[in-house]
Amino acid sequence: MIRGLFLSALATVAFSVLPVHAASKTPWSYSGNSGPQHWSMLDPAYVVCGSGKNQSPINLTRIVESDLPPIAFHYQPGGTEILNNRHTIQIDFEPGSSITLDGQSFELKQLHFHVPSENTIEGNAYAMEGHLVHADKNGNLAVIAVMYSIADKSAELAKAWNHMPLKAGQTKALPDAMDASAMLPGKPGHYRFNGSLTTPPCTEGVRWLVMKYDQTASAAQIEKFTKALHSANNRPLQPVNARIILK
Image (cartoon, rainbow, N blue to C red; front, top):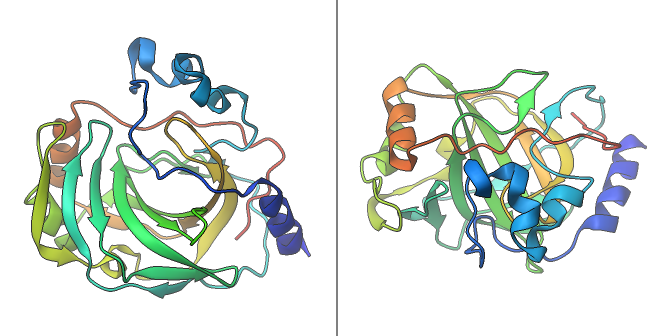
């Protein structure tokens, strides 16, 4: 019943949305006069960054037990290009990888990262958070979030990190295609809530699926990412309001 209410609420806000980190007409950043607290005032197209009631990221707390079905993953190697777009390091994926969610197919479009994590779980932040961004045929988004703790080096991340563009605006080809399945934690299980893009225009109607278990990356891998962007790139936590967080 709870899951049904959640999906009903999601259906009322779901609509075609822009790709995460799409080029914005008005420049924005993570600090200063163009930082998160000013996003809604930078451009009328960004107004929901301040007025929205289902904004991301959030602190996942007061989580409700439910009958969430597992996510059906259909991934294959396809991450072939890495770019530094000033706001994150992003790996673009060729068609062929997808997930099945709510009886719909969502194709994997890209993977990008935030340091430190944007979402937190019961108040706990992580060293890094990866976002696997998927879109259905109508452009509706589903984002799988994977938390990273500092420990062992990630061999799959190394495929991209070894070719990471260190200058904003640079793009490089990856000689070894990344496999998104290798980015997932070894154990299944996830939390779910409805939210938004975490960058302008902060469009709502995004299905968020935060994996329960974390992955690892080395301190050197986290440091290289931070140096490439010259700063942290996480939006502050947003109010949960009336949303239900399921597990």
